[in-house]
Length: 218
Image (tube, rainbow, N blue to C red; front, side, top):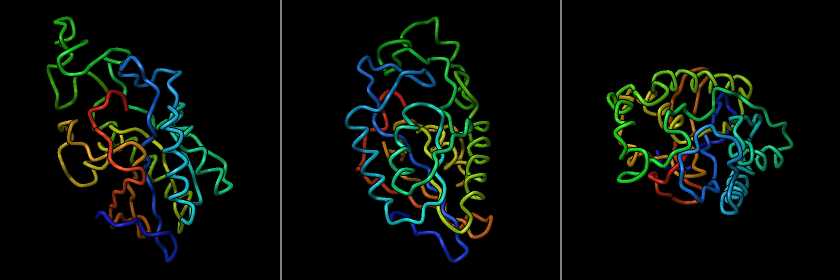
């Protein structure tokens, strides 16, 4: 499942889940849904690279999370295909009670006993939006995009945890996982191939190369 995602046509619809590019985050906090976090210069280059990668694809619909970094990543793709950029709240980053704090292992909020009660259940998880809720809302966004681009291709720009959670849900895997092992690099594509309404294939590609999944933020 590492090869290039097929284009639309022939009764097939492809929905590309695109993780946004790198964000300017000099203090290294978990920014979550906070406003004002935009793409870095590198992130803007990544967005252009993905737009070039998808230039010859049959893109008929582009939609993004309402957060700035997702909108900025989606804009070059919508522009290159002369499409209006849509927004879907269901593609937004996961809710997280550590938002605005440093959460790297060994420093920041995780060292404080005040925050330990939030960590009691990693399977739900207890510190934020339940994994199953994330998977269900993401699936709803994907199905809406699939219908909008039927017979062609759609791009949905979202965030690392929502994309990875949906992928695990679709592959029948448990929702809880080691964040260090997520296969969802910056500006990567997790492409869902449908025949009619049936998912028949999943393809993962990294147009800008691999990045460290442990980088703070998403």
